[in-house]
Image (cartoon, rainbow, N blue to C red; front, side, top):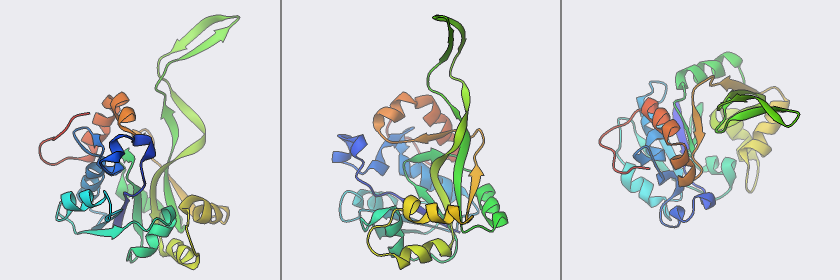
Length: 243
Protein backbone atom coordinates (compact mmCIF):
# COMPACT_ATOMS: atom_id res chain seq x y z
CA UNK A 1 0.00 0.00 0.00
CA UNK A 2 1.25 3.49 -0.85
CA UNK A 3 1.36 6.18 1.83
CA UNK A 4 0.33 9.62 0.59
CA UNK A 5 1.21 12.63 2.74
CA UNK A 6 -0.77 15.81 2.08
CA UNK A 7 1.68 18.60 2.93
CA UNK A 8 0.21 21.55 1.04
CA UNK A 9 -1.98 24.28 2.48
CA UNK A 10 -1.11 27.83 3.44
CA UNK A 11 -0.95 27.32 7.21
CA UNK A 12 -2.57 30.66 8.02
CA UNK A 13 -3.09 29.71 11.68
CA UNK A 14 0.63 29.04 12.00
CA UNK A 15 1.76 32.53 10.95
CA UNK A 16 4.27 34.15 11.19
CA UNK A 17 6.15 30.81 11.11
CA UNK A 18 4.58 29.89 7.77
CA UNK A 19 5.70 33.17 6.23
CA UNK A 20 9.11 31.51 5.96
CA UNK A 21 8.52 27.72 6.11
CA UNK A 22 5.76 25.35 4.97
CA UNK A 23 3.44 24.28 7.78
CA UNK A 24 4.67 20.70 7.43
CA UNK A 25 8.11 21.86 8.59
CA UNK A 26 6.93 23.16 11.98
CA UNK A 27 9.14 21.71 14.74
CA UNK A 28 7.51 19.05 16.91
CA UNK A 29 9.57 17.16 19.45
CA UNK A 30 12.80 18.35 17.84
CA UNK A 31 11.95 17.50 14.22
CA UNK A 32 9.59 18.78 11.52
CA UNK A 33 6.04 17.46 11.79
CA UNK A 34 6.28 15.80 8.37
CA UNK A 35 9.42 13.94 9.39
CA UNK A 36 7.52 12.09 12.10
CA UNK A 37 4.87 11.06 9.57
CA UNK A 38 7.50 9.91 7.06
CA UNK A 39 9.34 7.94 9.74
CA UNK A 40 6.12 6.27 10.86
CA UNK A 41 5.22 5.22 7.33
CA UNK A 42 8.79 4.16 6.61
CA UNK A 43 8.76 1.86 9.64
CA UNK A 44 5.48 0.17 8.66
CA UNK A 45 5.62 -3.06 6.68
CA UNK A 46 2.16 -2.16 5.35
CA UNK A 47 3.62 0.75 3.34
CA UNK A 48 5.71 0.14 0.21
CA UNK A 49 6.21 3.67 -1.18
CA UNK A 50 5.60 7.24 -0.03
CA UNK A 51 4.13 10.12 -2.05
CA UNK A 52 4.33 13.70 -0.74
CA UNK A 53 2.00 16.33 -2.19
CA UNK A 54 3.30 19.86 -1.56
CA UNK A 55 3.72 23.25 -3.20
CA UNK A 56 7.06 22.37 -4.76
CA UNK A 57 7.13 25.62 -6.75
CA UNK A 58 6.93 27.56 -3.50
CA UNK A 59 8.07 26.90 0.05
CA UNK A 60 7.25 23.21 -0.33
CA UNK A 61 10.55 22.93 -2.20
CA UNK A 62 12.13 22.88 1.26
CA UNK A 63 10.38 19.54 1.86
CA UNK A 64 11.76 17.98 -1.32
CA UNK A 65 15.24 19.33 -0.61
CA UNK A 66 15.29 17.75 2.85
CA UNK A 67 13.55 14.44 2.16
CA UNK A 68 14.57 13.41 -1.34
CA UNK A 69 16.32 10.07 -0.82
CA UNK A 70 15.37 10.01 2.86
CA UNK A 71 14.52 6.74 4.59
CA UNK A 72 14.39 3.19 3.28
CA UNK A 73 11.38 3.49 0.96
CA UNK A 74 11.03 5.38 -2.34
CA UNK A 75 9.63 8.90 -1.94
CA UNK A 76 7.91 10.66 -4.84
CA UNK A 77 6.99 14.35 -4.82
CA UNK A 78 3.87 15.73 -6.51
CA UNK A 79 3.01 19.40 -7.06
CA UNK A 80 0.04 20.64 -5.04
CA UNK A 81 -2.55 21.64 -7.65
CA UNK A 82 -4.51 23.95 -5.35
CA UNK A 83 -7.70 22.12 -6.35
CA UNK A 84 -8.84 21.06 -2.90
CA UNK A 85 -8.10 18.17 -0.57
CA UNK A 86 -9.55 15.71 -3.08
CA UNK A 87 -8.55 17.42 -6.31
CA UNK A 88 -4.86 17.19 -5.47
CA UNK A 89 -5.12 13.39 -5.70
CA UNK A 90 -5.93 13.59 -9.42
CA UNK A 91 -2.29 14.31 -10.19
CA UNK A 92 -0.74 11.51 -8.15
CA UNK A 93 -0.22 8.18 -9.92
CA UNK A 94 -1.60 5.88 -7.21
CA UNK A 95 -2.27 2.24 -8.11
CA UNK A 96 -4.47 0.31 -5.69
CA UNK A 97 -5.44 1.24 -2.14
CA UNK A 98 -3.53 3.96 -0.31
CA UNK A 99 -3.15 5.58 3.08
CA UNK A 100 -3.84 9.33 2.95
CA UNK A 101 -2.40 11.30 5.85
CA UNK A 102 -2.95 15.04 6.29
CA UNK A 103 0.40 16.15 7.58
CA UNK A 104 -0.78 18.28 10.49
CA UNK A 105 -2.04 15.22 12.37
CA UNK A 106 0.30 13.52 14.82
CA UNK A 107 -0.58 9.98 15.89
CA UNK A 108 1.23 6.67 16.26
CA UNK A 109 -1.45 5.10 14.10
CA UNK A 110 -1.60 1.31 13.89
CA UNK A 111 -1.38 1.32 10.10
CA UNK A 112 -1.64 -2.45 9.70
CA UNK A 113 -4.61 -2.59 12.09
CA UNK A 114 -6.40 0.10 10.11
CA UNK A 115 -5.60 -1.65 6.83
CA UNK A 116 -7.09 -4.88 8.17
CA UNK A 117 -10.24 -3.04 9.28
CA UNK A 118 -10.53 -1.53 5.78
CA UNK A 119 -10.19 -4.89 4.04
CA UNK A 120 -12.58 -6.68 6.39
CA UNK A 121 -15.24 -3.98 5.96
CA UNK A 122 -15.33 -4.24 2.17
CA UNK A 123 -15.88 -0.47 2.12
CA UNK A 124 -14.53 1.98 -0.44
CA UNK A 125 -12.85 4.04 2.28
CA UNK A 126 -11.89 3.87 5.94
CA UNK A 127 -11.28 6.86 8.22
CA UNK A 128 -9.42 6.99 11.52
CA UNK A 129 -11.64 8.26 14.33
CA UNK A 130 -11.70 8.43 18.08
CA UNK A 131 -14.68 8.08 20.40
CA UNK A 132 -12.87 9.31 23.52
CA UNK A 133 -10.88 12.50 24.05
CA UNK A 134 -8.65 13.62 26.93
CA UNK A 135 -9.47 17.20 27.88
CA UNK A 136 -6.83 19.91 28.38
CA UNK A 137 -8.63 21.47 31.36
CA UNK A 138 -10.28 20.28 34.56
CA UNK A 139 -14.06 20.01 34.98
CA UNK A 140 -16.23 21.00 37.94
CA UNK A 141 -19.69 19.81 38.94
CA UNK A 142 -21.54 22.82 40.37
CA UNK A 143 -24.68 22.66 42.51
CA UNK A 144 -26.31 25.66 44.18
CA UNK A 145 -23.37 27.84 43.26
CA UNK A 146 -20.89 25.52 44.97
CA UNK A 147 -18.37 23.11 43.44
CA UNK A 148 -19.33 19.65 44.69
CA UNK A 149 -16.89 17.66 42.62
CA UNK A 150 -13.79 18.38 40.58
CA UNK A 151 -12.13 16.17 38.00
CA UNK A 152 -8.70 17.04 36.60
CA UNK A 153 -8.44 16.62 32.82
CA UNK A 154 -10.94 13.78 32.35
CA UNK A 155 -11.25 11.51 29.32
CA UNK A 156 -14.64 12.22 27.78
CA UNK A 157 -16.85 9.89 25.77
CA UNK A 158 -17.73 11.90 22.67
CA UNK A 159 -21.32 12.11 21.37
CA UNK A 160 -19.91 11.86 17.84
CA UNK A 161 -16.66 10.27 16.75
CA UNK A 162 -13.93 12.75 15.87
CA UNK A 163 -12.36 12.53 12.39
CA UNK A 164 -8.55 12.52 12.62
CA UNK A 165 -7.26 13.30 9.12
CA UNK A 166 -5.99 9.80 8.26
CA UNK A 167 -7.76 7.65 5.65
CA UNK A 168 -7.36 4.49 3.63
CA UNK A 169 -8.93 5.00 0.23
CA UNK A 170 -9.58 2.71 -2.70
CA UNK A 171 -9.76 3.32 -6.43
CA UNK A 172 -13.52 3.96 -6.22
CA UNK A 173 -12.70 7.18 -4.39
CA UNK A 174 -10.20 8.25 -7.04
CA UNK A 175 -12.71 7.40 -9.79
CA UNK A 176 -15.26 9.78 -8.24
CA UNK A 177 -12.67 12.51 -7.88
CA UNK A 178 -11.59 12.17 -11.52
CA UNK A 179 -15.22 12.34 -12.66
CA UNK A 180 -15.56 15.80 -11.08
CA UNK A 181 -14.30 19.08 -12.47
CA UNK A 182 -12.75 21.91 -10.55
CA UNK A 183 -11.82 21.88 -6.84
CA UNK A 184 -12.86 18.81 -4.87
CA UNK A 185 -13.21 18.68 -1.10
CA UNK A 186 -12.56 15.08 -0.04
CA UNK A 187 -14.91 15.19 2.96
CA UNK A 188 -17.87 17.13 1.60
CA UNK A 189 -17.80 16.23 -2.08
CA UNK A 190 -16.77 12.57 -1.87
CA UNK A 191 -16.85 10.88 1.52
CA UNK A 192 -20.12 12.42 2.68
CA UNK A 193 -22.02 10.83 -0.22
CA UNK A 194 -20.13 7.56 0.14
CA UNK A 195 -20.96 7.44 3.84
CA UNK A 196 -24.68 7.83 3.10
CA UNK A 197 -24.32 4.84 0.75
CA UNK A 198 -22.63 2.71 3.43
CA UNK A 199 -19.23 2.91 1.76
CA UNK A 200 -17.07 4.38 4.54
CA UNK A 201 -15.75 2.30 7.44
CA UNK A 202 -14.37 3.68 10.72
CA UNK A 203 -11.20 2.68 12.54
CA UNK A 204 -11.24 3.79 16.18
CA UNK A 205 -7.73 4.50 17.48
CA UNK A 206 -8.89 3.83 21.05
CA UNK A 207 -6.71 5.51 23.66
CA UNK A 208 -3.81 6.24 21.31
CA UNK A 209 -2.95 9.94 21.66
CA UNK A 210 -3.60 12.23 18.69
CA UNK A 211 -2.90 15.92 18.15
CA UNK A 212 -3.88 18.46 15.52
CA UNK A 213 -0.56 20.23 14.97
CA UNK A 214 -2.21 23.41 13.76
CA UNK A 215 0.38 25.91 15.01
CA UNK A 216 3.63 26.23 16.96
CA UNK A 217 1.58 27.54 19.92
CA UNK A 218 -0.48 24.34 20.04
CA UNK A 219 2.64 22.19 19.82
CA UNK A 220 4.33 24.11 22.62
CA UNK A 221 1.25 24.04 24.87
CA UNK A 222 0.95 20.27 24.40
CA UNK A 223 4.66 19.50 24.71
CA UNK A 224 4.18 16.36 26.84
CA UNK A 225 1.65 14.92 24.38
CA UNK A 226 3.91 15.78 21.44
CA UNK A 227 6.85 13.97 23.04
CA UNK A 228 4.69 10.93 23.80
CA UNK A 229 3.31 10.70 20.27
CA UNK A 230 6.52 11.41 18.37
CA UNK A 231 8.46 8.93 20.50
CA UNK A 232 5.94 6.23 19.57
CA UNK A 233 6.03 7.24 15.88
CA UNK A 234 9.80 6.63 15.70
CA UNK A 235 12.73 8.91 14.94
CA UNK A 236 16.13 8.94 13.26
CA UNK A 237 19.25 10.91 14.03
CA UNK A 238 19.79 13.72 16.50
CA UNK A 239 17.05 16.23 17.16
CA UNK A 240 17.88 19.55 15.49
CA UNK A 241 15.40 21.90 17.12
CA UNK A 242 13.23 22.05 20.21
CA UNK A 243 9.72 23.32 20.74
